[in-house]
Image (tube, rainbow, N blue to C red; front, side, top):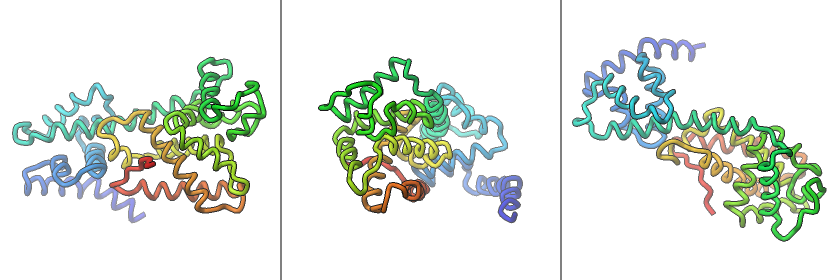
Length: 293
């Protein structure tokens, strides 16, 4: 209750007068002061908050721009804030970078969501080729005897037809599995081998799809903002989402074997423990979770 009242009064009264006072003292607007004080994710996050909570409609709309509109919004912001580009030579570049990151994050979520909503379709030739590519990447010396086969269990699917395992994350789950196997083939083989451990083993493909859901939920909840604001000096893309997924796969395998669960029956418990660990790391303004091999 107290927190809600504070947020209301700060947003409607105190913030305005504080900004006005600081402008009189420094001769700079809040956006300029943020650029002078912070770097990385803390800077971009500060700019995002300043624009979002501004009473100026142009500044508010800047956070909803598409990439092709960013340059125009930068010019509009400078005009609204009476910023002289000759006196503040870095403002235009910094603002463009921040807007690309802010608006790019929103677009990335829409792109990921669009792929996630597409179900795996066994009548789609591209989907079928992608599935067979996964098999060939993970089992290059073993021939798949049939499209519907118990062999799929060898790479961690639950049934004879993997399409049923993609229901939650759609084709996104398969794309991520293929991306990791193609770009980190040696590591994928090592993790697949470890997943067959007699005591600590787990279903490689199923866990991979589960980690796609984790990456997606972190993106959706905006928990990936600090990571992407630090990691990408512009608009993030699907490539950066796939890279984060690869980080999760590699780190989860290490985490699982370090924890030594008594049984796979405790998977959800350790999955949530790992999830909380990642969320904790992502709260750091300086975070950049990249796969280091």
